[in-house]
Image (cartoon, rainbow over all chains, first blue to last red; front, side, top):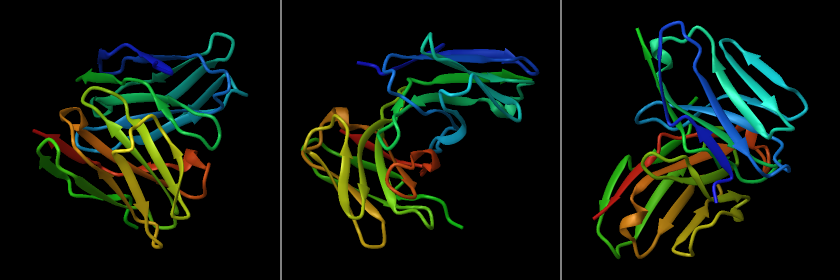
Length: 111
Length: 114
């Protein structure tokens, strides 16, 4: 059973566009929601994370929106650049316990 | 400051064989977690080691075992390899059990089972 469902599977945007990646979860005990960025041949790198006590968090061009009642959270990339082309994973965990990852979204930003 | 390192980078084995993968955590980190990432999928948690003991385990069979050494480095062992074990194996390190928001991943070991 997939604990975290991620969509879309792939995404193509023009440079400067705002790709949005969505994730949904069922376990209301989850209290930490990170997003990871993975380039080919590399391990995932933490991009930004949020806890359920806030509805939005922004770091540079990356923003997480969190909807606790809908059990959904999403990643927005402002002014996307070709260098943002990568695979993005959402994840969820309860404090001190294992991470459950989504299936990933392959993002391509066209110059 | 070296990040998380893993060896080897690539490995080819045949069904039924055994394999050992190695991980050195980021400097200052004492907790190591192992993940399996199948092609086109997200990482799946195998287990976590802290203070040389397995502290948490995901839904993986006993063929998957590990070890953590006094210097915090870790090994992942897989016995009786199956074709389905072909994947990228990721090691992640963090400081202190439970502080997983500080988790850093290594580049992984790509295992191919023929």
